[in-house]
Image (cartoon, rainbow, N blue to C red):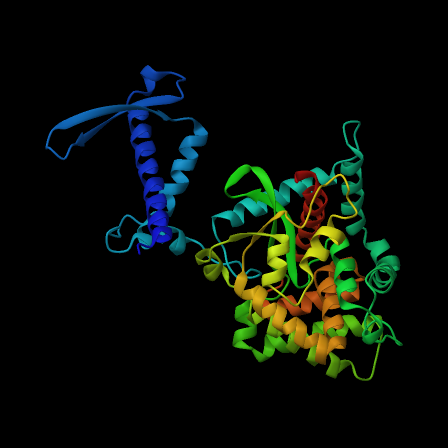
Length: 420
């Protein structure tokens, strides 16, 4: 059977290259006739085509030559390696120059054409949130600005940061044995704990959110995929003793600052091993690109992927509190990352039976890990120490980046319910 997915990818990339070539021709034509064309935003190109019978025909097409179109064409052409034969290695031809000219940032595990877009978005969002209140601001916008400014108020972080985090961890998320002296995991229902996390927009084991429907971009669908808060899979696979040791020290230092305990080292070691198991069943970027998605109804997915009550979780707990959003067990559920979900359910069931306390500690750590920037300076320094070991360079923008990333996550979570 033909590999239609691969064929479609090749055709798509080839189409992009063709468009780039056409735009380049239009730019050259526009340059030659610049004095005649004035402020025109289009150019007419003539393409010669030879039919299968040997006759030659010509076709004229209007091509965009606005600054935006020219900029887009330059971006495409700058990524192409024209020294490569596309018939021999189309990937090197279409992306070779990008690979040669780009370097992976010291604080990142990868880079692509969307890296700059994400960075520009973060900068634009930062600028918008730093502005003072104005009469056009909605209440949601005002709250977002307050939230952002509170994150950068170091005096408040020093005096209230730790107490605020402990309050959320113990009173809203149920706590764990690393944050409460008399905690007993057997007295807390794990499903209910995960629901508490979800209602705070937290996704420790899997991610459920609203996305556009790939089969109908005008509509929205509930989507289920793997969690994304882990370190890179490569980090766990290579088991670099320096990086792993620094990561464990980070966990120990954070929890020791909350509740010192004699068995902290042993608990953190077990927490890390459980985290590693989950991280190693995640799919990396290449695996995710190759996989397909599948639509289920929620009730059918619940029957096929046992070990967790998906129907109750999605229908009753996530959307039950929002009667204006009609989600039933027959709602379509777009599922990706099947391999991770199978592995996660096996690990989850084993942890429930054999190391429930470690599982609850891990859930709380998944909340704390991206929020060290909301804690007093000594905790932020713990994070910077780890980042320095991990990247071998100190990036002073990591704290600001953490705030911006969290702001985007919170805004996305708030907007999801408006889409369905």
